[in-house]
Image (tube, rainbow, N blue to C red; front, top):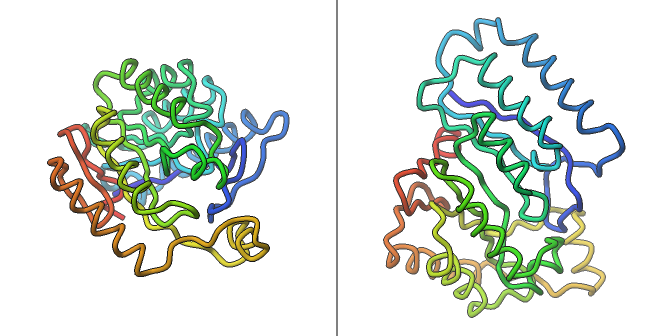
Length: 257
């Protein structure tokens, strides 16, 4: 069984995002964390919760790293205290590279998280920034290096997306090559871009302020090229879109759902 916890805050909304989220106001972090803890306490005694062990917990987007370090730590600690987690439970914290400072990394590890998923989407500065990602290529790589230095026994994975506006096959291949050759992370998710109706991305393309994303045939070619490069690099294919390089990456939550 699996638990999903939604943290609906982001520093900036990405154009392609289809999740419910809002921008932060003063006091939102602690107020929302207090409400989550109260709700978890209310349901923790229900038979639906207590009857079987929980094997995966995913704290997702918005982005849990929008919380303060102290709130992030007490949220993870509450999950471990209130829910019947299996001994080898996978506890994932999703993060944005732009707000996952060392203090929050340490808070996540201290709280008990053992998997961190970073939304990179693309290493190409123009491609990533024009859809709402904040950091440039160099800053993202520096952040991933720092994270791997700080975290010893937890899995680190990233999201990469194909089909983004202005992301040619050459750029997609460079994204994959960067993942394979310039990082030592444990796994990656290769996601096809979905353009949601009335999303910020859809509106930008319609107005002509952003190039159209790749069509289905181009996305199919990118999918095949991704599979080819990941297989050649000896990543294990864990699902249609999830890949593992080391044994630390189990991808339990995504597998279960």
